[in-house]
Length: 421
Image (cartoon, rainbow, N blue to C red; front, side, top):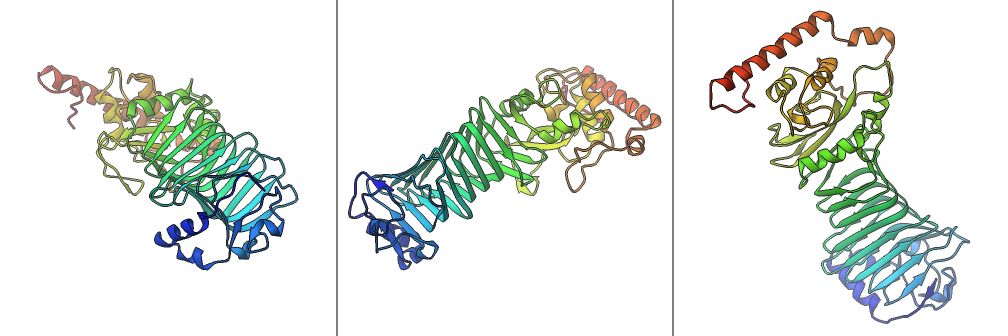
């Protein structure tokens, strides 16, 4: 490493802040403080006490008003904890560099930045936290060919956290966004996403690869793809028309191959000519389908729920039945409608195409594991397609509800949505 400027009080200030926040064990650990002007991380004289950090040294304390260049390619270098604070920037821009850490804390009580444009950083058995304490401000800038992997990434603690990805690869098990994550290029793969902050996507690719349920406070997208695969999403403060627009963009002409909020699982089913039971990303507000729980989580009001489910599952309960038929009949012929109102092909209008989509999946039940994307055998196919008698009964039931709705509405005063048993 090379330090362009050094300071003297950073160590004491940062360790005191950690102790107050409940991290007193750091102050008891062996702490290696950067004091060197050399560009070599592994030169013992660049650290105090003497000797470069190792896994048993617990902490590499970088708390000076400095720009530190990590450019060593003879690694990888291992360290228990890397702490970046006091207006310090740790910059890693050289191909072939590799840093393995147990924990990385950026902006504990002051400001800290990590810029990763080349090489790799691995925190697979620990976590990265940006903005640990109140008054702290942490930023991670990932670009070009940089590669980051972590068990957990906390974008904001009691302080401010910002993650800006304009390239590279980020692979994380648990992504907790309390601040702001911006993705404009590169790839993000996450097992579970959660938090009270904002995920803003203007490009690149993001994929949910592990958890069936994910929840974020705010989500915006102008370009790129976010792949839910066969998982679900809750957006606390999203507009249903906006979220629906992201899904409509990805759906395209039905093959789920365009940019937007997409599902590679639905894409696989759409491309399988032997599987008539198509799947999709259904969406609704909590109040729109009158639920207080969604995948075991409390929801309410205008919170937007997105579920990978059968085409035709209007109320997102994983079953295509008469309740969903009621949704189609209630709004049949109406425009400016959403999925939960019976618009299953995202064109805004509830019509015979939506009825047909529901009919093909009528009676289907979402299994404990999400619907398979693979093809079914010809024997299974025969068992899955609705029998003519059942289909005829379904059509008759639909026509009865449609007629009954119109009869009620012609009696005056009742809303078009009114449906009686």
